[in-house]
Length: 243
Image 1 (cartoon, rainbow, N blue to C red):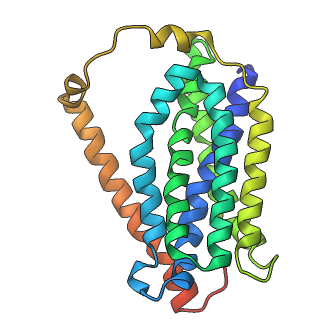
Image 2 (cartoon, rainbow, N blue to C red; image 1 turned 90 degrees about the horizontal axis):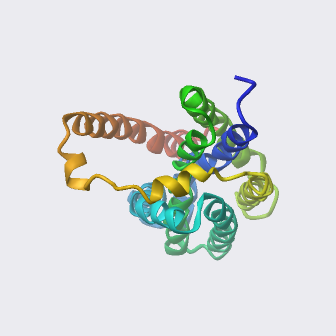
């Protein structure tokens, strides 16, 4: 495992940073939303809308990578995310629920980019190392499960307005990701694979294995979202527990 290329370890760390955006928003999005809107039923809309943003940008992100390469898009998304975090901070300061929802939607592109790290890792190793490389990158999800809430709670009270410091810390993670990704060396395999013939999408979605995978993923995500979206609002806003 230690003989894996440097790329895999860089991608694993950066994957954790990218994934922490979604974890961060699930953790505090509903709480912030509750403080910004008078319609409390819409409190968790920022959490829902980041999922919508992710779904709508997965294909465009993949297309951009095929055109411009993984490294350029990874680095560009780091800068993009820092800018969107700035919009989120402005939304909190101005108490604009709609602007906060917009920033959440735009952060969906960051989450969509995160899913490409595992493929970049596959392209960086020999065939016999692929499963190990994927496992290492996916372990970044465990780190993000710690980073997201920790960043949110650590910076919550830094400024007069709650959670502004949290967003600043989140931006710092992407500064670090940008620096690390400067050392990422894209594999030539990716450019070669882009030029190969592709199966039509309708052929893929008709496969039984594809249908089973989508149904299983949908069920799991619905259950996870149901619990994770409501819990922070219920415990912190309604029951008064601290973060």
